[in-house]
Length: 316
Ligand code: GLU
Image (tube, rainbow, N blue to C red):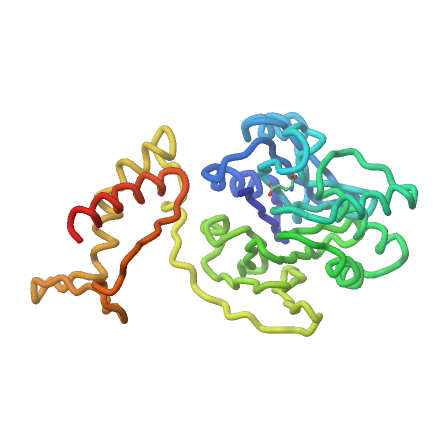
């Protein structure tokens, strides 16, 4: 699970992009990168390993510009190296990707046969080439994205910057989430509302197959048949504090200390303090009719599932 953030802003974005990546540290990462657009150039900085490495790269060599994209990678295709880190850039575009392009091999072969050379082992880079090819043929960013999306199989959330269009980003999603955040004269893309929490609470969730053009003025969203669509703008209840590490040494320590608050918040929905009652949600089935329960979980949820199994067996 990687993190994506994109900003079309009024002022320099590189610090805010890196802040966004820091807030997504909980997703884990093996490399990270940013790319801004300035004066017809794509300014790209990437680093292998911890985010601190990218921060030092930027310290020596900042990426100026009011528009940019950034990514923390969780490698699926290709080792966690700097050359495999996103954003992937070709002549005309830079892009970040969350997910897997399942048909990247035949696409890569076709692109190579057309004379394009690759600098990474990722599935992602084919998308950068495909979009760039369209732009080089004279298509607008919107037309290029429309032409390329139907060729992609698999799961993706994409944020794409265009060298010659320093006023817009394009996002697209299929199988991986992507949200649009609305700010004051600024617009954002993020892998989830948490990623954008400190920037804005006004969020629209893209639906399967949607793609979106974001500018400083807002967002134009299209469905998979390229029809303009409206997606409800909701106010996200996620606060920046909820996802930041705060004064804790690491996220696990934060989670441990947050347990009383989280348990209280969870129970709050079921407690009627005035009547001193617990009101559990009504179930539309009778537990006595159930003969077998399967709990599917992974990681720490698996341990929680084992405790649940023990309790079910003890009390049922
Ligand atoms: N499949 C892409 C890669 O390996 C994206 C992985 C991700 O979601 O971070 O670079």
